[in-house]
Image (cartoon, rainbow, N blue to C red):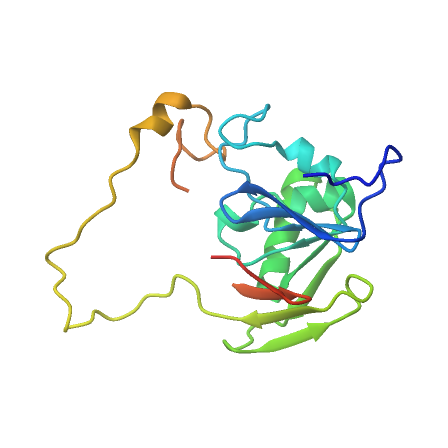
Length: 207
């Protein structure tokens, strides 16, 4: 994919370009605006390997905004650090803004401040919707509060005794041996690991 229109380094403004980063994280160019959709990089290695990029490469894209789908670590990790290093605006819920500010403070000190826009206010009920065409200068952005990974009561009509668990593909471990975990608290070789946004006519969601 060609992000740049010529040797000047200008970002193409005539198309939408999506580049997969890790899990649900995408780097996107929308009418010349470079943004990140989520900010998690699995395994966080120093060189592209299991994941085709690094945190430094995401920072080098100099995104103007980081849109967070929901606050779980495998979607929202590094949002605060990227905001500190690039001056990007983080866009998410009030609760997620507090989380991103904590990440920024942990990375760069307690006095660190970042720009975080809460399209969905703290405590909003599922279904709350907000729309804006000002965040990306004319590119419409919609945010909808939704429920993700919420506990549900058992369904008595289903047989829970026959649970089939997925069998992991051993090829992945053979090609990419266990390395550092994504976080300081995660074990070596870690393999583990809620806002729906609509940009223009494309729907994007953190799952």
